[in-house]
Image 1 (cartoon, rainbow, N blue to C red):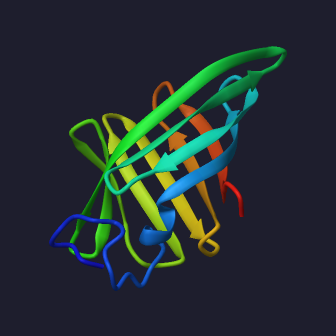
Image 2 (tube, rainbow, N blue to C red):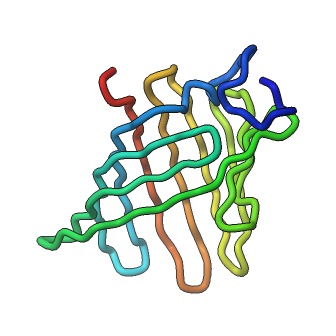
Length: 145
């Protein structure tokens, strides 16, 4: 990976960062342990050299809502830093299975990423805090794969 130009698609990649670039189908299940509710998100994600964005629908009981999120991506020292706004959220490196943690105020985000090849990855999160107590499991599959 060429960290000098900040490009995810630089020549010489030896890990999945380059494979992220493209369009993905996303399916996510969220379980709220505080209220006992669960919901399912289904949508699409787009990964470019500098950004991750996703949008889709959340099904909560009989209701359907639209949802989206986005992150800025930056390559530094062989890792991809994921930013929410101006704050670094997590850092991912070349391992096929990775643990990520982020403290946001009183909330602790504990995650695990599983890179299953160039056309699929998954992430699992457990979030705990004074007003948060949920788990999230997401599967990403490359569109057209």
